[in-house]
Length: 132
Figure 1: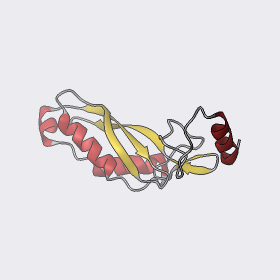
Figure 2 (figure 1 turned 90 degrees about the vertical axis):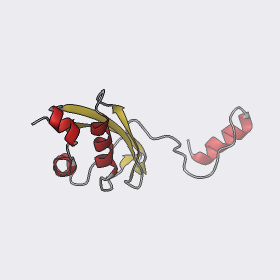
Figure 3 (figure 1 turned 180 degrees about the horizontal axis):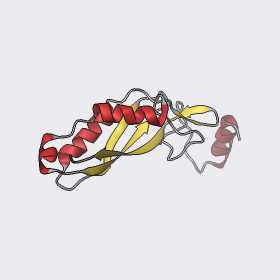
């Protein structure tokens, strides 16, 4: 069904508010036909992470190794927004902050695509911290 047909149905039946102009995608997708990708692929992302993650001193001294799960949105333009800790480490806020910092500093991604169009997609990523 085309957008114009949808507008007509909505206006005729009156059970939904009139569509607003602008993007039709109000919330990011959980999954897309083509998921977003770090430029250069998975291997490039692993290199980026190992080069940019700085192990917080307080956690390194305590010998804490952990995995912080981060959720963020890859926008249709490839930018990273809405970065948040999905599952952090109790007492390890410095690890959580470092994981968020590294994700926010990432270069633009290749956006996800749905029906041939770039779309906003939610992405989840574990950030690993290994004790020495």
